[in-house]
Image (cartoon, rainbow, N blue to C red; front, side, top):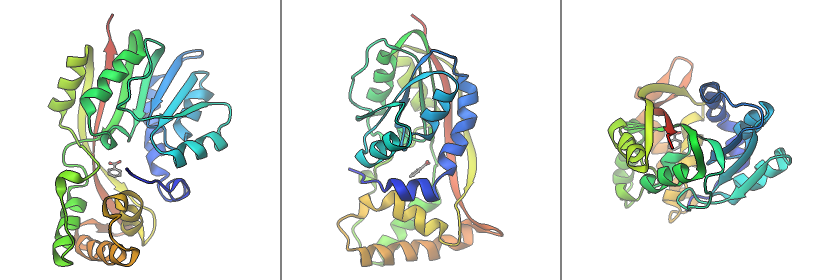
Length: 252
Ligand code: BEZ
């Protein structure tokens, strides 16, 4: 289970919700629509949806994220919940999700739950890490673990980055019509000289929780060293993000 630091997330990883604003324009939320935000984090995008007049429910599996979201946006309904839990039945006009579904391992189930949550004609607009996402970072983690004799089991990583074909199959099997599916490279700037170190600390600490903080520090510094020639550009660190973005609809 990933333990999130919601303050570090808001402070150093604001770009996550900034990219999400672009996704909101595709969703085009309408006044009075009921919208479910899957993996809402600290609630910034749920708040944007709410500003457009939508009635938003956001959920996240991290208690820290939900606590922060409730504090920041007390007018929105936030719930502590896992995306793999089937909880909502035919009650939303749209389901929205930004940078969250790759944290959910059983994506087939997640997609089915989103389908179940929608009203007929409801739309499902999402973006997540797609195939090849953060490949250089994953390779560096593997190599640094080997160098430092730290056990590393790739299959235990908390993320699944699907291909277009895999996600299209999940959506179609659930009953969706897929209007749009794109897979694209989005090099993503990480803030500051400590950009990659902060990223590793924020997102992969739970995977290495069996290590002491000193061992983790050595591992992340070794990754930083390995990645510098590839991901450090003129103005700082740039992560090799690949995104999968889709627009799907429940037809009946
Ligand atoms: C992503 O948004 O692609 C991502 C974020 C954290 C860990 C892995 C991937």
